[in-house]
Every structure is written in structure tokens, then in C-alpha cells.
Image (tube, rainbow, N blue to C red; front, top):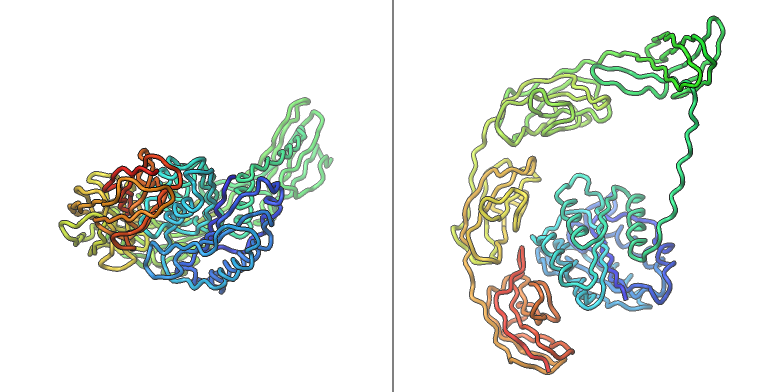
Length: 582
């Protein structure tokens, strides 16, 4: 039976019920589902004056009312018990039928307080659905970036490799301004063979969920509506407005008439692109633009049997604009720019190299934010220009030079630390919202990181180290252009790990396991198949349970492997021994 995981994350708005899609699934094919609700602290944020947790409760209530009775449903919540704990993931209600009111009551009792372990929640849910034994499908809806340092791409690859028909579909909600979040979500979907869709409002979210639901239940797509066949006419008329170097089609505000001598052969019309069928002969097009009261006459000749287009171009001067700003500043510094200009919809001030096209900018701020306007300088030193760009026609109305100087850079951190440890890193830099610190192999590209933390979280910043020993770099990454602003080397040292347990055990029994290891948050001893990857498992227990701890022995006899797995930015098998299940 195909299993289904629905993930509801921060910022979900009420959406139309998906019952019309799921209701078409016959009872014998109805999937099981685990509803995962975000209980992190960000759920206290507001949308249109309403807390997001309140919106989520209403959405879940509507969803419960509309889902078909055949659906076996459960509930998992994360971030609802402890602040700052990335392992705070709990299945409150196991999948079953007839439990809708219990789920509704549990959701209404959620008190958000913790973090958002998006990637680990997908992995935990997959384990709950026994994805290594049965096909499993995850539908994740999220409005932001992973906050618990997991590598979405790596974990998705592990799940895909270990699972039987494992698929994750991802809907990114309100992530238009978060390219890193979109990249993480798209990687989860593409790595597991799923779909990645984005939605910026309630209507788009409903459409995206319906599209994914249709994929999950293998509903055939409707036949496309055939495009109407365009009727080809002999003569078409149109007009363009030229402002500066830009031209745009005029679809309103132009009156067209056609004369042959003194006779009107096409009556005056304000249609966007009028069409007339005319016999052979000489004609004159009269075009009159209402705004500006400009008139143009264009003679033209019609040749029978040939389609023709007659076009006129009106001209209009660009509006004046001016700028005033400091002559220079440090990389990433915010400067105040005083401006005058039309302040049209979408107009902005931007920084760019001199001579760059109007829409090739490095930083920008919209003029609707007022004057003077705060504008961020480029992340790299050099000579640039500040420009007023009119959105209509992408016209540069004014520009002034600005010189950007290098900023002092520094990182403060220990020279060595054990694997998986969380260290405190002091930093000097611009400190913008999208700047972050990361760990990476020496020489790696800026986007190739192992773990990261945003500088907006404070100074110093807590940063989790890799679980594999070796030499690494801690880097300050400028979010504006993803360049390395500062870097320092750290030696990550290994920690001994060992396991002590019987070499054999009875199927379905409880195995006592003594262990030694780093015991970092998320570490766990596990029983797995010998050929499984680091994330493969049959049963497991977290090290927070102490040593010795108890692990459930598989119910199927055979040869297995007992492992100590270090959980961090990546997973690592640190100790292993064979286990024979009788």
C-alpha cells in the first residue's frame, strides 16, 4: 500500500479542500497519511494580524472535515515541547481511521516554542512509514529554510537509496525571496523523483496541493483545451510608444481610422490591434493618441492576397530624476540616498557596474520606501554607480558614481574541536540578514557547505561541526553575492566509539546495548542490514537514553549489523558489529 505524508509548515493560509481529488481514489487504494504540523516558535508570527498557528489549526480542521473516511490518518508535531532542540519531533497519534476528533484536539493544543527540523522531520516520518519495506510518499509544504543544520540534498539521497519507491513532493509557500530555501526544497524533490512547486498566495497553494495530490493518486491530467485557431486578416494596425531607448506596445488610448481618398473605409476604433480586409489600392492610416494629443498619418498600399501590418510609433520624453548620496562607503554598508523622480510602480534605486543594463543590478531598494532611501552597497570593493531605474520600459533616469572600499574581516574560533561539536564563532563583517557562517572542505565553492548558521543569530554564533574528522574551513559568506568574505581553519578531531552487545538475539526480543561515542544530539545506535547506507535502519534508539540502552530486535531472522551512527550535518557510521537474529 502506498503511504502518504502531508507536512504543514509555518505560514500556511486556508486553502480549498482536496477532497475532490482524494475522493476519487477507490477504498482499496486509499493511502495512509501522517499529518506533520509545525509547532516551532515562528508559528506565533502573524499574517494579516492572525497568528500562523491559529491559521494552521483552522486549515487542519478544514482538511480533516474534507478527507475521505477511508484514509488512515496520523499526527506528528515538531518544535512544540522544547526551545532550541532539533530532536523535538513527536508522533502524537498513530495512523488509523475514526480518529479525526482526536487529531483536531491535539492540533488545537499545540503551543509553539522550538526550531524547524524540516529535513529530519522528513526522515523521521519516512522511518515511521517503514519506507525501507513499503513504498512511501512524502508531501512537504514549507515556507522557509532548514534551521537545524541538516543537509537536505544528502539526506534526500540517503532516503532515496535506502527506500522502496520513496518519493518526496515539495511545495514551497511564500519563498519567492528565499533562493536558498527554494534550492533546498527543489533538491529534496528532484533527488527523490518528486515534484517541486511554488505558491505565493492561498489560491496558488491550493492549486499546488491539488496538483501534487493528483500525482500521488495517479489521477490522469485533463485533456488540454485546444487553442482557438486565429483568423488571418489582410491588414492589421498597431501602435508603439517610444520612451528613451525603450519601446512598448500601446494597447489602449489610440484611435485608428483608415481613409481611401476622402472616404472612410475603416471607422474610428480604439481597439488594441484592429484588423480590416481591404481590396487593392492606396490608403492612409490616421492614428491619434489621446494622452498627449499626438496624431500620425501613415500612407500604405494593399496588395491582394498578402497579409500586411501597418504600425505607427509615438514618442514621449522621459520624466526627470536626480540622486544625491555619499561618494563612497565600505563593502555591504547601507548609505542614505536622496532622490527625485516619478516614483512609479516598481521604480527602484540600484547599484551596478558603470554601463550595465538597467535590470543588471547588485543591490536595490524600491522608491516607494521614501526619500532619503537606505541602499546597500555592493559586497566587493570597486567603483560602481547608483542609479534611478524606472520600471516602465526599464529606463535609467539618473546615475551617480560611488566608490566601495574593503571592510575589515576577522573570525574568532578554537583551533581544534571534536567531531559534531557546537562551537562559538565570533565574527567581523557587515552583519546583514542573509550573511552566514559555514563549515566546508578547504577550497570548496561558497555554496558547497557542510553546516551553516546565520550571523543574524548573534555574535558569537553557534556552529555545528562535521562528524568526520579532518581539516576544515569556517567561512563568513556574504549573502548578497555568495562570496567568501573571511575564512579560518579548524582541525576537527575524532572521538572513540564502540558497541558492546550479544552477537545473536531472538527475533522480536529487546537487545541491551552498551555504547561509547561522542553522544552529540541526534546520535543513535541502530540495527540495520549490512549493505544499508548510513541512514539505513530497521530499529534504533537515541543515545540520550543512556548506556546501556535497549533496541528492538527485528522480527525476521537473518544477518544484521549493529551500528553507532553519529548524526550531524551529515551521518557517519562510527562503530559496527555483526548481529545474528534467530
